[in-house]
Amino acid sequence: MPYIINEKTLALIPYKNNTKILEHNNSFLLNENSSKIVAANCFYYGSSLEGRQKGSSYLIGTNYKPPIIINDKLNIILIPTHSIRNKECIWVNLNNILNYYQTTNNKVMIEFKNHKKVTINISFSIFDKQVLRATRLESVLRGRNNKKYL
Image (cartoon, rainbow, N blue to C red; front, side, top):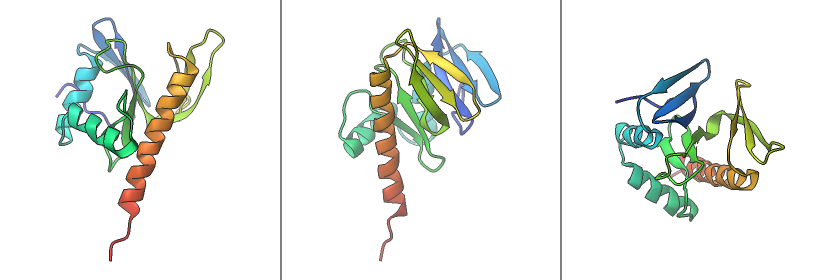
């Protein structure tokens, strides 16, 4: 297992043939593709990446770039910025986003809850749509988990 995604994980950012892991108080490089790290974590938490994609697609009705549930008990939902087959795909932990906004050069600045900031090369409207999908998925999961049974 190369890296276990956890509550302190902010983002997985491709860097050449490596992945830069951003955490609350730490950042480091791993010699592994970011999508492979996500896939390994899906297996670690009991599913496959394809299974997580299909589950998310079913729950929120979207097939393209669905958010991925890594661990629903810890509320870890990752937002992909691109297709997972794209080596430039950045994975952002929904639960650690404080705010995000468009920069002057049509990129997105993400501010995390610990006030770290990162700029990513994606349009605001696309990233906003991805956040809304992930938030909808989180809401569906919360509603399902809070349902009272007789």
